[in-house]
Length: 115
Length: 110
Image (tube, rainbow over all chains, first blue to last red):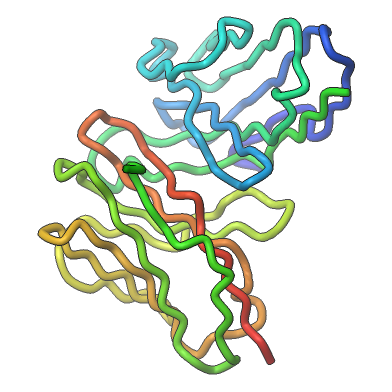
């Protein structure tokens, strides 16, 4: 069974459209994340939720809105897509307790291409 | 100064040799340190973590941490072509965030 699963894996869409990426984890973790990896492979945190509460909100345009209906799910909605949004978006999760509990486990990634 | 810095590479190492990957971090309050491996087109996967000064060994991999120097490294012994990948250093900072370096691309030549 996939521990952190996200859909869709590939997404090609036009500028100005609105799209969502869904993520689910079955590890029983309390914390979930969205990371963005650009063309230079730099992996940058966007958001983090702990038990449905937003705890990290990096400098991300307001067009990006995360939503966590429960601690096993974290979705990402993007409004008015721009060319610069093209990237790989990784969902991830971790236990939030203890030093080793901070280990992040990643989903397979969602390749977003805006044309 | 970047929060987590790595040499982007590529680092080319002959098969069977030791590959040495380095990482420095700026937040002295950082608590945990991680090494991830990422193959092209795949997601990062955890190799190992370390949070105490010194060495930690797991199979062919050894992580080394020096908090005074704010330096963490990964040694890969008996390098194999399958070790060719991008290696990401990650740090759990005092701001309760896991911050990644930009990665070092490692190439093992047969």
